[in-house]
Length: 170
Image (tube, rainbow, N blue to C red; front, side, top):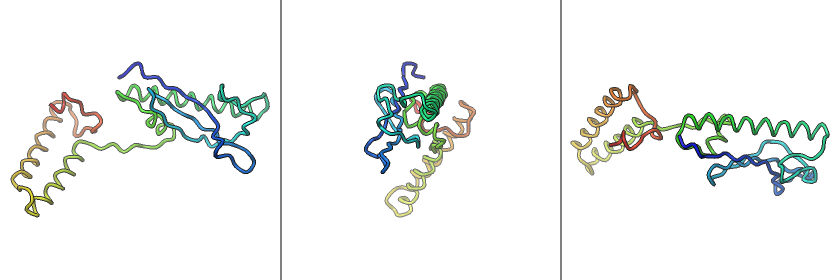
């Protein structure tokens, strides 16, 4: 886990996407170590009512209080997702925080999915005569040996590709 990663959350108006009433969508920008991503919150504000430096809506009206409390809630939720990701993965990217907040599940590929894909493509080439069938059999044996090693050393049936490290590969 990398401890010195910092999440920076910025709320801003995207004035270039203003609607016919002059309302601009509120966007959130997430930055971690210079990498950033942004997405719309689905809220709109008139630019005259927005404090850009603070990233909040001006005034004490009901509309302003509601939006500002919503922005605080969003910031808290983003921080919560970031903290959870920091405990689960060695390197957190802004897209990961955004996807966790939006509820988008990232499909992770596993080692044996990669083995199966490789062996399938190799088998096709071996059948066409471009590659050796004996080599294809050795790849199948290697896959089974890695499966046994994974069961013995890690007590797991498969492992995500992103979780592979140099020690495992060696």
